[in-house]
Length: 157
Image 1: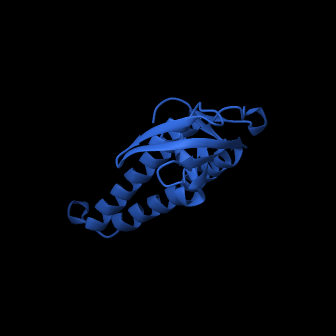
Image 2 (image 1 turned 30 degrees about the vertical axis):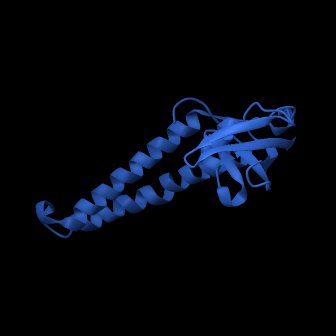
Image 3 (image 1 turned 45 degrees about the horizontal axis):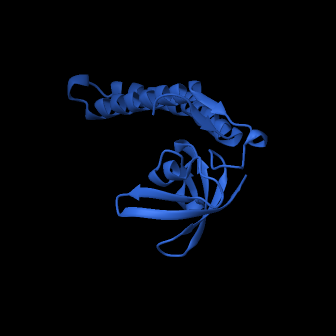
């Protein structure tokens, strides 16, 4: 994902903590693994050394990606969120017109999405379809299984 990523303060702190752990714990462990493998002899035929170097490369790529994400992240102040329409960090209660079932979704960034916790990404098909809608409005959402129709019942924080 390129561009700005909006996060809650908690999610930002979690990402910073994850980055700190990678740099202070996982990076030194990867270096030790390489050193131990190097001591075992001929590097041309040392699979353990190759695996340790690969693991280090993957770790460095993850660190670089996380640093990039943090550089593009912006913390959203929940007290400034407009609940007159669906936007990021709002909780929206909808009724599915096909099944007549009601559900509440919390619209969040891709990094925070967790369907088990009813947190859906604003870049998901349902998230995109709900953005900007107001209470009483019907949202038609294209999903792989077809078209879903939701009526917006409530918007809160």
